[in-house]
Length: 308
Image (cartoon, rainbow, N blue to C red; front, side):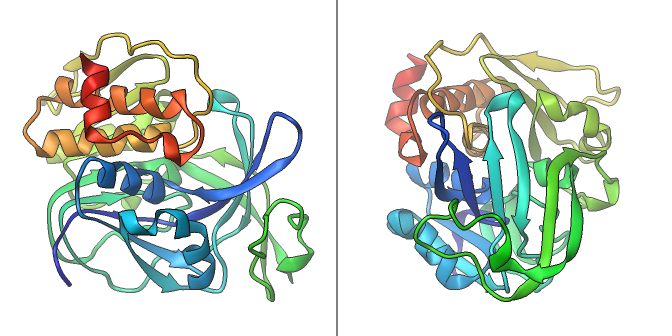
């Protein structure tokens, strides 16, 4: 395959979002989507490698398809999430799952970003990646697995807009997603940087140990408060902290952590210090939460202007 500057691997999701008026909207989601869009708007040639129903993924991403390439591994279902609330008060329910990515991947990337939403990303791949970034949110999620039922009978018909949910019999995934401790065996053998939220820290002790072993940075985001970057010192006690992010009235925060991660990884790969890279990530996330939807994700000139 031809070389890309930024490749994300993970499920592009169909997100059924409960709005403030009590209705729902259907839109694309997942770290692979939000991070790829941010990388593309930073000027990088970008590819999403995902899994799901190809025509459903294509319909979800159609408004953005000129901004990145997409490789879809066919599956019976597209991962579908029902989302309520925001920030620390967000709750999610897994309605359909595209399954683990088992197909051997051939990747050639300057930056490879592993972005699982539901324990799907592979541990190994073929090819070259100069920089490996990780957002392990999907590795610290647990959900209840139900019985095999016709998926069209799930209570999602009013949530999913014009593109119908996959039909046929499959496993119904019921119950809210809840946190679970990170299994160190789910981590890649090596990575250069990782990003988690402060709410995921208690689940990610294994991540900090692995990061020290392979000399990786771990950035911890904290919403409107400064981000912290843990440096790969032998004793794991060295950190740097950004200044307070520029205050904006938040309108919506979906994907803000993924936007931070993409900007952080890109800045590190360009040679910026961990503090400079995290500050750049904060500025990118600030632009995201100041607007609504993926259209709020800023371009490089917008982020650089926000830093002045």
